[in-house]
Image (cartoon, rainbow, N blue to C red; front, side, top):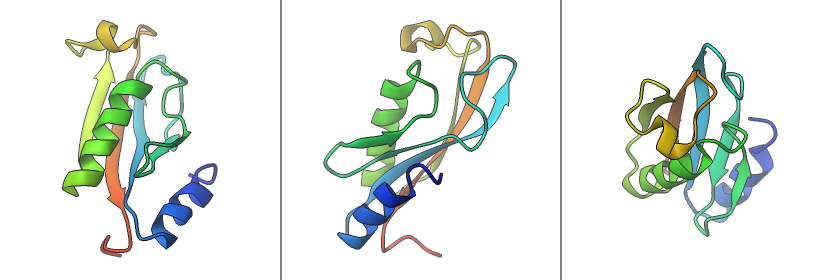
Length: 108
């Protein structure tokens, strides 16, 4: 989270809403450890990474959706997913990623 904190704070100070995705659990071989974070600013700028590239596009879209709807979600990506190979997670592991909206309206 520290690697993206400045980006999240810039969005917060500007009154915008960032979609923040955090790896909360990994199973078997996974590209990033729990705690890895990616943010998506309202203008689409990305900071950080949750997978080193293999599921970034799918998480990007989910983060934009969560920022718009203000509905946090937990999503699993991995070889057990129907779309695992479509999104590129071929490492044999699984990632649980929690995505939330962060703004000045976010409850503390």
